[in-house]
Length: 179
Image (cartoon, rainbow, N blue to C red; front, side, top):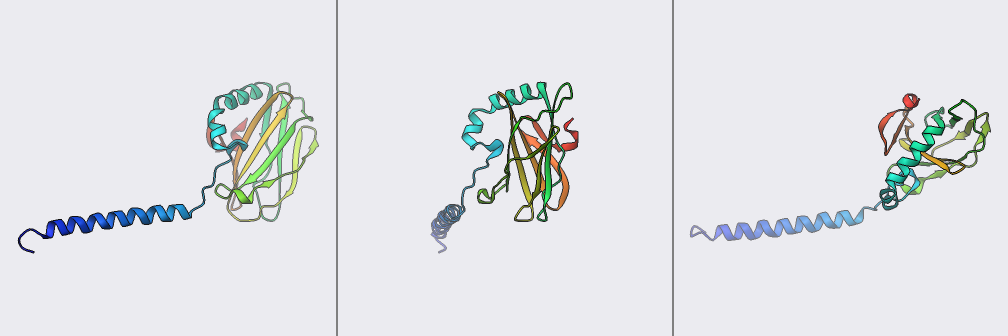
């Protein structure tokens, strides 16, 4: 070994080790399921292709209406999720369509699609909403009034009473700053 044969053996051993480590990493990665994020209730590629249109639709909607989340954080015991929708003159809008989905940030299989809300003077109320697991939940909503629509995406946690808005056009912030 003193005649210089230890360098090639070391390089070959290191190369074999690196190839085995890469193969193991690929094998472990293939075992993990891929979960697409359904932000704004759209698949990633569809959202990416239509991001500008969605942002423009949100701007147009916000010029005509004020949409505010007035509900509670999600809970395993049950909570009330509610939205207040009025036009710019302060008149209640009672004919909007609300589609609301509660989803886990990672697990698509645990989505909860909420039914029709109770409407009371511009307040769209989903009562006794229970989530199945502790932790973070996304409250994804799409509001349609006539030809205008807007997405409102909220983050909530069963351990935190705050509800925070996020989306393409804004960083995550407290929903109380939504006015």
